[in-house]
Length: 545
Ligand SMILES: Cc1cc2nc3c(=O)[nH]c(=O)nc-3n(C[C@H](O)[C@H](O)[C@H](O)COP(=O)(O)OP(=O)(O)OC[C@H]3O[C@@H](n4cnc5c(N)ncnc54)[C@H](O)[C@@H]3O)c2cc1C
Image (tube, rainbow, N blue to C red):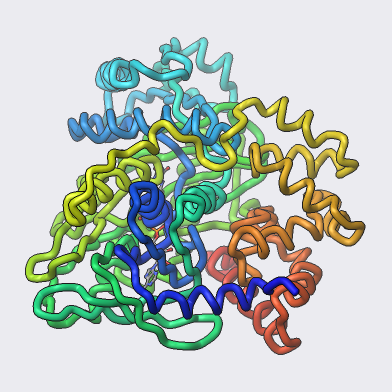
C-alpha cells in the first residue's frame, strides 16, 4: 500500500536527523528562491516553515512585479534596474501567473510631485527597462485622460501618463511554484515546522531545533549553515540564540489593501496616484475585482495577527473616493482586507517611506555559518537566491554558477495559454474550471486535469461558481504539500481569496482533507474552527469603522 501524505511527512521529518548543508528558515518567496538556487548548485538544502509556504508577507503584497517607479525618487537606480530585469524574467518564466498591467498616473495641481519630475522619472524607468517586452509609456493631456477615464476627479487635473508594469495573479501560487522548483532540484521542504532554537558551538553553527506544529514533536537537524529568511520575523528567529547578542534587524511597516467589486468609475487599467499626504496609492484591477491601498505604518505588534484598523479603512476609502468620486465606497462595499508587514531594515527614521527597499545579506559577527536576509521584494526573489547561493558556493568551496535566470518556473514550461487550454479542453470539466486551471497551474494544468479526471469522485464539482473539484483539493494535499484547511483554501486552490474567503466550501473541503489526511472528527472540527479564527484578520469590523 502506498504511503499517506501524513506518513510521508513524518518520515521526512525523521530523516532530517542526517543533517543538511544549509537550513533555510522561512518558506516565503525569498526562502523558496534561496532553496531553489542552493539546491540547483548541488547543496543539501532543508527549508523549515512555521506555517505554510507563502503564508507570511508573500501573501499580503500589492501583487505587483515591478521596477518600483517610486524608488527612482530616492535615486535607487540599481534597485530599479535589478527589479526591471527580474520583472522581465518572471514574465517569461511564469507567464500564467505574471502578466503585464498598465498603470495610469493622473497629475493634479496639488500633487507634491510635479508632472515634469514624473515625466522625467518615466523616461528614466523606460531607459532602465531597455530589454523589456512590455508596452512603452506615453503622456496624456487632461482632455484625453478624461475621455479615457471619465471616472477620474476632474478638479485640479492637469494631465497624466500611462506606463507598464506587471502583476502576479496569485503570489501564493508563485511562492508554491518556486518551492516546487526547489523540491525538483532536490531541496527538502517541511511546512508547519517552527524553528525554535539555533545551536552555536565555539562561534560556529552546528544545528537547528524545530517543533512540528502538526505532529507535535521536537527535532534537531544538524546544519553547516543557516539562512534566516523569516521576513519580518527575522529577529524572533535569532532571539533564541542569546549568546550571539544580535542587534535588532527588522523595522517593518504594515500595509493594508481592501478588496472590492467593480464600482462606478472603476478604471480598466490600474491607477497610481498621490494621496493627500503625498503617499503613493493604487487602485488595481485584480481577478475581476479591485485592490485598493496601501498604507505604510510602523508596526511593533503581533506579526501573526497584523490586520487593518478602522483608521486604515477610512484612509483608503477616502483616498479612493477622492480620486474616483463616483465610487462612493463605504466599508459595506469591502469584501475583506488584508495586511502584511514589509520586511525592512531597522532604522531610526521618522519617515517610513525613506527606508530602503533593497535587500541586504547580513553575515553575523561571531557566528560562522549564519546568514540573514533583511528586506527583499516579491519581484526580486530570484536575485536574492542567486546572491545567497554565490556566498554559499564560496563557503563550501564550490564553483557552480547560477542558471535560474535561464529557467522557467514549473508551470511556465509552455508559455502559450491557448495550447495549454487546447490540451485540456476535451476533459469534460466545466469551462470555469478549465479557464481557472490555465491561469493557476500553467503547463502543469494537464497533469492536474489527468488527476482530477481519473475517477468520478475526483471529477465531482464542489462549487459551481468557482468550478472547484474534489480532485484539485486532493492534488493540493498529495502533490503540493498542503496539510491544513487554510493551506488548501487560501494558498493552493485559491477559493479562499474569493469574496467570501472560501467560507461556502469549508465543510466539503474539510471532509476531503479529513479523508486524505486521516483526520479524526476532533481534528476536522479544530481545523474548521482555526480557519474561522484565521478569517477574523480579514473580515471588516464594520461596527468599529
Ligand atoms: C503591503 C505590502 C505591499 C507589498 N507590495 C509589493 C509588491 O507589489 N511587489 C513586490 O515585489 N513586493 C511587495 N511587497 C514586499 C513583499 O511582499 C515582501 O518583501 C516579500 O514577500 C517578502 O518575502 P519573504 O520570503 O522574505 O518573507 P515572508 O513571505 O514573510 O516569509 C517569511 C516566512 O518565515 C516564516 N517564519 C517566521 N518565523 C519562523 C520560524 N521561527 N520558523 C520557521 N519559519 C518561520 C513565516 O511564517 C513566513 O512564511 C509588499 C509588502 C507589503 C507588506
